[in-house]
Amino acid sequence: MKHKLIWFVGIMALFFAFGAQAQEVPDEIKKLVPLHPDAKVTSCQTTGPVTQVKLQTTANAKAIFDWYKKKMTEGGWQIIHEREKENNYRLVMTKDDRQFGFGVHKLPDKDTRFFYSIKKIDKKS
Image 1 (cartoon, rainbow, N blue to C red):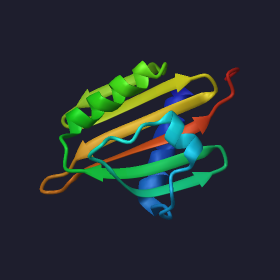
Image 2 (cartoon, rainbow, N blue to C red):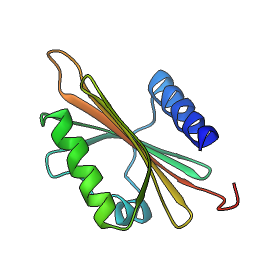
Image 3 (tube, one colour):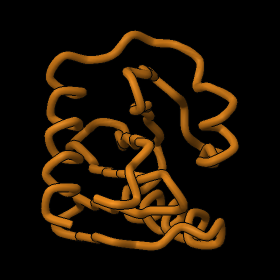
Image 4 (cartoon, rainbow, N blue to C red):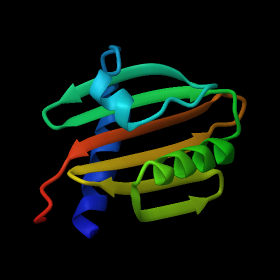
């Protein structure tokens, strides 16, 4: 599990450091991850087996976290890592051959920003 969490943190660091080209979220990903009704996709990038999506909303960070946790769990995803600390929330889940990584935070005087990634994984690792 440790290497999966390191992978997730590394991908998200690169994603936020270099940004992503705005594009439509692929239909395959839309079927796996619901879009929060108050969220707006600000960018999406697919590189190899990983799709990364950045979003923003005026909704509360904790409410966004709870909504995604509930929706993904209802969809059969299993939580493998969860962290809530000082208005920063992280979640890593798996289902079949996919891993879902999610993070949300609220910056002072700004909208709530959040991201997720979906990665195809090898079940043997």
